[in-house]
Image 1 (cartoon, rainbow, N blue to C red):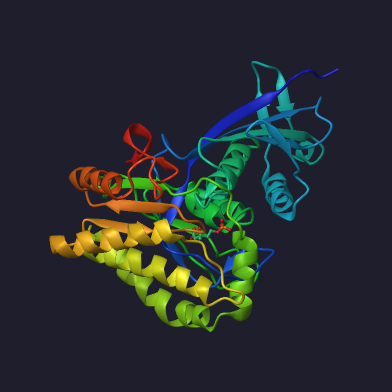
Image 2 (tube, rainbow, N blue to C red):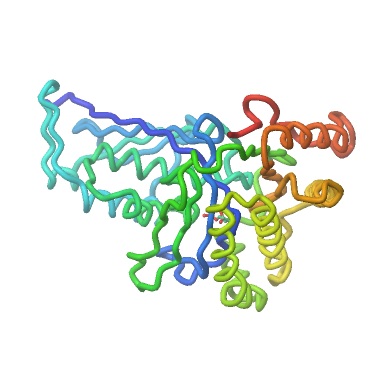
Length: 354
Ligand code: PMV
């Protein structure tokens, strides 16, 4: 019988939104209520590595996450796999004597092994890196010829934020207008070299899994929050344009002001949900006060903060010197082994994500 296996591996970093996505207008296609903008982290840090394999010896699609088998039966995985199989093309490996015809992809099964080098579902956007990597690796294996924006629309159906991880640098997810989601895609605003003196420090307040998943949180917010309507219609459209200008001109003062304001409005929208959703905790609030005080005392912002669906702080420093000062301040305010200490300090190689 046929004994061959064909494999591909990809590595994809996570991304952190500076203009947040929160709220879907279509849950199954994952279409958002507003545009969002993110920065993709350096691939040497928070990232997912995924190996995908195809073989006639496989009898079903299977996936392992961090070494543990997980189910692929969920709609999100099924949507991604279906969209990719539909676009798969002929693959030939003459050396190995393998030829896969376009129609064979419908019957061949896939094995997928994925590793996160950071805590899963702790509000560190693990699903973003995960689905982006899955789609990217499978697209390579299956010789899918779409460009990265078209691939982003497939990754989006796995996890909304995943569509932004197909690109490096600063990325915009355009909400789109079409009902089928074909124009709800990510585009690169600038590449990773454009603003390369920024330093990102992540303070891991807690590596525990979050209590409210983003899916159910968003659903409740869309159903109950009036503030979300105001945010999506009146605030984000203007703010997105201002953010694009700040990024284009490397204007850190505007960038920091917009990033912090948007994180705070996202968490206000969570509080405006019924029942209210609390993602930040006392330590998160202390970090905000500490950064706000420091920025004010310096006269111009040194650090921007942003928090996703969890208590961990993502701190974006204007340069290496500000990042070093920030770490000093964090260590002073949250000394290790005190009541208020952080779960871990992301220091040195793993903490300063450049
Ligand atoms: O794509 P999801 O379902 O993991 O949602 C991500 C939502 C936030 O991280 C809170 C904001 C964002 O834009 O990434």
